[in-house]
Length: 154
Image (tube, rainbow, N blue to C red; front, side):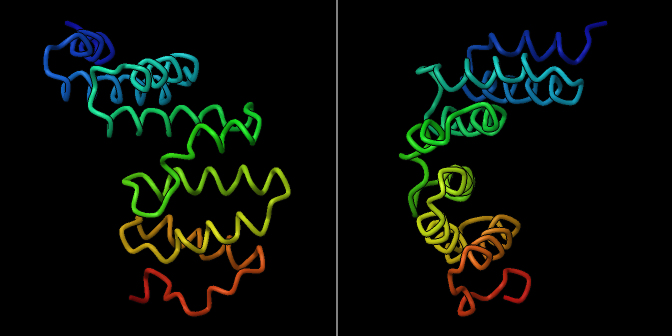
């Protein structure tokens, strides 16, 4: 009987792009659960660079890769890597914006970070948990977000 990782590895070679992507994310999740950050990072890097996968899957893999590498990356590298994804209206704006804003904080660019957190907080397409953190972070950076209703209160 095959283990879950072996089955996921087999599915990673599937003809269907969606199945391959789902298997890759699943395999990375299993690796993280087992404490194998190196394998998870390799899976995310592979998916982010796989031009045969649809862009939303590649973008999500890049965000997950960046989140895992965040502490070891130069803040400017985080910002440049995620720049296309950290714009209002972009599908992964909340996640990419949050990582970008934290990199700006590391660079001492607190005004820029505060504005980005406020933009995330105002975007009702961003998940409520991310918006809630963005409200807290923007406020802590001196940006007036008192006119933004906390997600739970909406």
